[in-house]
Amino acid sequence: MGWYIDTLKEITEHSYWISRQLQAIFKCRIMDSAIGFAVASFAGYIWQVEQHLQAFFTLVRQWYMGETARLFLEDADLQDVSIDGSVIRAHACAAGAANSTADNEALGRSKGGFGSKIHALCDALGMPVKFLLTGGQEAECKQAMPLLENVKTSAVLADKAYDTNELRKWLKEQGIKAVIPPKSNRKETIACDYWHYKERHAVECLFGKLKHYRRISTRYEKKAMNYMGMLSFASVLLWLR
Image (cartoon, rainbow, N blue to C red):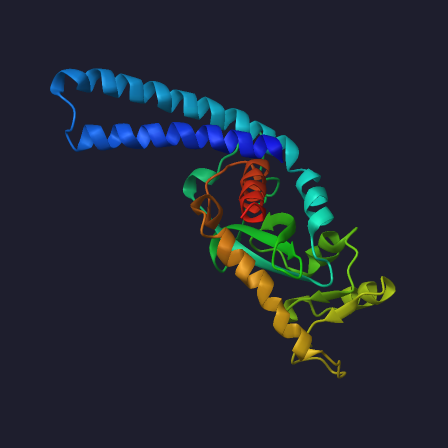
């Protein structure tokens, strides 16, 4: 993750200079004759930051596809894992990707409107491990097995949305304890370790932390890969805390 840290430092240095220039310009602490030079220099630094960001996001897009998950798995506390989904509203500018469709870019319509759904898996400490992105109308239970693939854990904590016979059978075959409360309309009684289930708050807290970043709480990217890149970037920031 060294290149992440180096790039962040460089962006931070430019951002600090820009903030000082803005303070000087808008608080009129520089003479009129120097305003033109300051604005020109400010525009130059804006261009430099933009170039760094473009290169950075290119690396993020190339890197997020499995690489972040592999690194997170190495340090994750997999005593138990929690999974959940959260709908993200998409901005109007997220529509209309060239040479693509809404389905290909994980955009859809649900009760929450036009948007996407993040399916997340976190470790016992609430740190992000894996993500999947689908349209907002997609059921969470269908993404559980892809999320849990290649994850060696002893227990999976999830809410009632994941209470399906198929998932319970798959978890049993994998030797994983299913800490999932049964739906109220189930005919047979299924036991649930509700004491252990209390730890599922970790994934809810994870979504709360991720949505502090505006680029995550609202989707502005047309391409699903770009949005996943931002999601990976935000996850790295959480791991670096």
